[in-house]
Length: 179
Image (cartoon, rainbow, N blue to C red; front, side, top):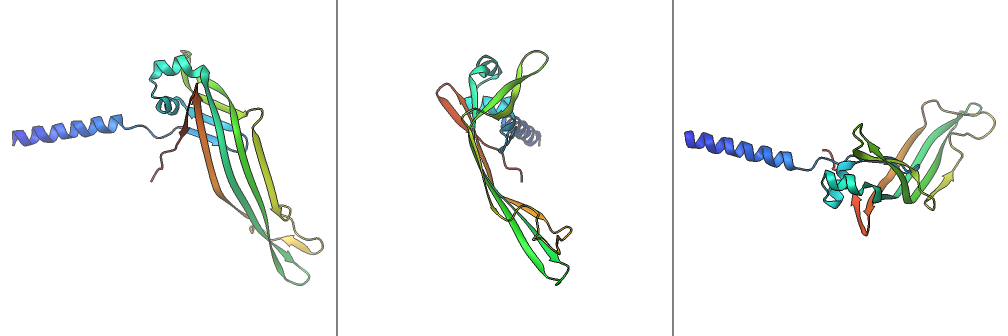
């Protein structure tokens, strides 16, 4: 019995060590249309296999790039008070963003880098939007009016690829998927 308890305790300790060494989920976010967001220091350290000392020494040479694509479709209904007819309308915006991001190191009171503030798209980056459909939330002239509560927006393909670079090395940062 003593042997079983000791083995059970050791299994628990091994599980705790394994859990403690599992990488934390990604700590980055970016608004693809503006290039603003945040990247935690852990993501950069994981990308290059750096410890904290390496990050503090090398953070000035880190850069970020973004590739993103999304389609946003808004639908709404218009009602004609004269003939009691309803008309469904739509407006689609497809956005593509590619290029570098401007960033600043975020530091704590001890002047240690704790992450990177993404402050916008770098010069030479592109952000292209294409629209299709009717003007957003409009109805034809005359007795037509938008139906209250009928407007809804769906975003598809909202995929962003954020790459961190240092010297000749680059790594795509990924998010852990929460279940």
